[in-house]
Length: 291
Image (cartoon, rainbow, N blue to C red):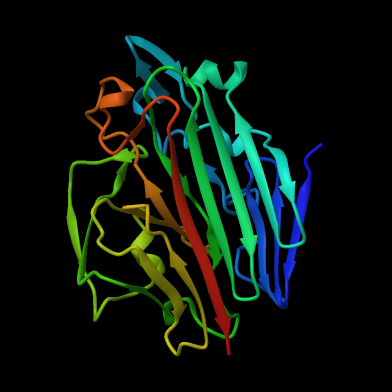
């Protein structure tokens, strides 16, 4: 049976499922920052993507000449994590390699996620430990779907993304959920991208070389917003389904297979490799305001 952990700190509340260690609810008083899932549109809220982001070629990864079936966005989001620590304002969940994970990914690992809630923000630390004898390639993504519009009295096109360090964004569109060859440039207005559904008519936007490691998703008048900090994650994906009420802002370490990639997983563009008995930590922080 799936368990859900409730965290509280002043006006902030969070709910985390042990399925995928997924953040299912994040509230400032009665305002839910995350969208309410609709199974007919997108049944998730904020999954973690591991050990791949996006789709792999032929839905496999190749390791030492052998093909292993790999689900879209990896297997972690459908795995049950063990709770190893819990308090009123924090919890830590863990997934350890096992017979099922080895069917997809022939490496020994510990994937640990810590949530820490304060009165002003939610901090997340993801740690991937290589507990095996071989070097371990992986990718990791965080895939939160935020409420769009943030306030019901604001139109969708009255929202902006404000990037900390970019004047323009080079992006690619997915081709069969993989990275396509074409590159496009999106100009920003003093670091701001005005949001509109039409941006997503042809699918998501993958920014593989953004300089920003922080952004704000907010109403144009600044009355409501979310600040997302992701200092360790150099890629960013934006995605939504036109007609729906969410916007996914996905900081990532790695990305989907390029459409022409057919090599060993360790040679895939964008992967990170951890040496035996070493680990990698990544942090994410979400802050919000409502005036």
